[in-house]
Length: 501
Image (tube, rainbow, N blue to C red; front, side, top):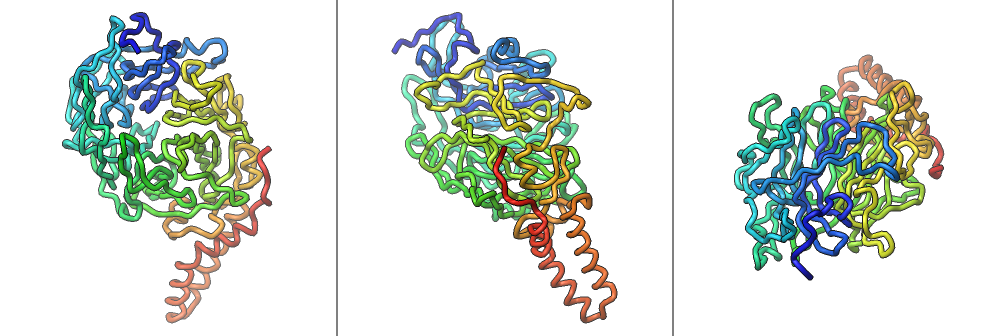
């Protein structure tokens, strides 16, 4: 195969697939960088461009997807990396971590370069959105460690990002006429990191967070994490970590390790810096298969009675590409299948939520023999309310019902309607830790919660009028078993099992 390709390469339409992209978001504008691409001509090369996807206005991908893209060539001082982190903060984008992308670099004259790359260790590269310029390399604050394949979450309004886990590759990728590092080993991280380390600081750095109970989580590679606002201690929000691998190791350049079951997830309370474990349940006992390299977004009911995490794609335990979408509804921690049986296999993709109701999927691979190459420049849209893949991004005002509505098939399971009013608001078997019940502070608006609150009030009233000895006993029993009792009562009030419509 020749090492020469056309000098007038179109980085939107001449690309078949792209893999291992990193995605930053500012409002309804997405910034994609890193990974590699396979060209329609059959050549694999490193992605050498920053792609800007402006999704601020309505568009039909069938007729006008090209207008969404602005493409900027990366200077040679910027690394070509995969599995790293890319965050937006105050009109700037920050890139750090990951591993070197092993494919050659496409040069402007149509030739391919195998020159050594920019070193990643300890570096952070910043792009100014307003001037379209990259700053000189700065110190990330992580020392020589290069966090790769971490689970990442982002608070779009607060402009704060978090990373958990991932790994440090103990042998670096080198690119030249001969490759080294194909049998790279990896050291798992069990750390929480925050970007920026200090809000409002002039120089953005990545800071380590001293999280409680990290040992109960352990390592996490190629997993997913989402941020949910307005819950948790002091309403500072929570993070939900799920999926991915533990005990990760690399064999012949491929990541291996035990896939985490989705029959439980981890919840991080930002206010107290504490991790908790919570078992999940599933409609019809149909859990999503364990997976890595998936993507996830979250959408909340307008009244805050449910927070619905959409998990899409990835690799399963047999390295098959998964195409289903499952919804984990909180605070019931209950799984419901969310794709109406129309599956779209994808792995190595990136996704984000725009306009409160669309999941935008960018690039990835599918290995389909009939439709391997991407359409629409690698953009796909999933309507989180109708649970349908669509080519139309319809931007409406909030008064025109442009916001997210809970899907009918979901609210028939958790109760309420499209605006909220969920009644299945406590896990079927209760919260594993009482602090989780406190963090979600289940609203008194729903019938199930009213029952729960009434129970809590009744227990408290009993405690108040009890004698000294009884006070101690009732306090201990009520604290230990209240979450369990709340779960049982809520389960009796939940709607009957139903299928998605």
